[in-house]
Image (cartoon, rainbow, N blue to C red; front, side):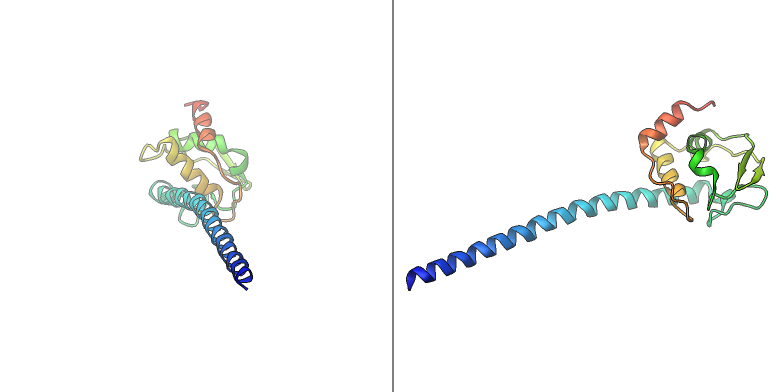
Length: 153
């Protein structure tokens, strides 16, 4: 009878140990995923705030631009194929004529009003490339730095 009780108790303790390990391991995995998601969300929100401080005057809150004056960012066919140009334009401005969704825009783009650094430009780019129906995907800081080093300013 004692042997049966010992086996039963041992099995119960091993089961509880295994269960606690699974719960503990699961929590750590969820913690890592949440941290990664929080970083991505934080960068996106920083990009949104920087957009609102630097870009909204011309491109508007909804990203639709200002008629024939300033091009839309929302649903823009220009974004995906001109990422490097946009990065340079944010930093240094541009006087280049561009065609967005079949319309020509001639208004110059001033350089960022707050002289954004590489990280801030990366945050803004990640915001505009993935807002208002745009699904270009993430851009890495290294890509921004490379594009900036190749700008013709």
